[in-house]
Length: 107
Image 1: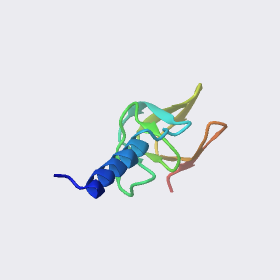
Image 2: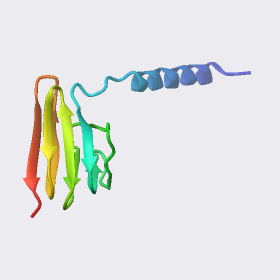
Image 3: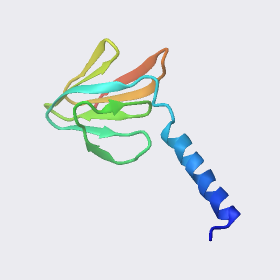
């Protein structure tokens, strides 16, 4: 038979999990719309770089790296941002009111 403590612990864990699952997504994202050539993506919460994929949502602190002879296009709302060969693009702020995206050429 189950004890009262185990039942309440299970209910508390279920409530916590439900709160995490229902959390709101970021208010504004930039979507990767076009890729050509070697383009890498670094999520803000991870340190590793990975191959970028079309339709991936970029949020605050994410970075995109276009290698030589590569191109990428991001859409944020009705705005398109194109990144050409040898460029670093990072999303530093993405809120409902504004987005701040920085582009720098490779050194």
